[in-house]
Image 1 (tube, helix red, strand yellow):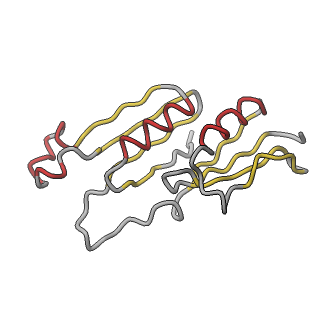
Image 2: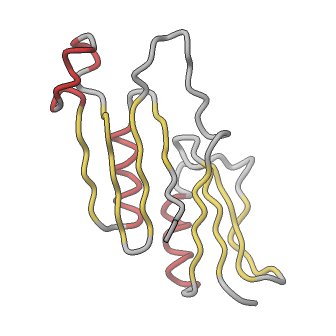
Length: 140
């Protein structure tokens, strides 16, 4: 069976961002730095503290991420190339996570969680530039 898991790219603040998401959705978070792997010999020491792999699991939510490791010639474009789609049946639970992620979010692009004909809907770009889209199952 296939499933979709988002993979996020950060530029040096992966551990901070993933720790924030962990505080919002709970579950378990595993962070591996480049310096903790045999790959560290392939990179300069200033990159050894960067996250080579982050994995957050909370029930059916799973998010993987990394810090940017490539040369400066290839710049990451955060926020507009990925989104995390959160679907739920418990509107109170959905709202609780939405509200936590909304702290420090971009207010210009914030769409508050609200009833729509297809169910509860809302979206935001969090304080790290990541886009989150929420949908509650069924009409609310």
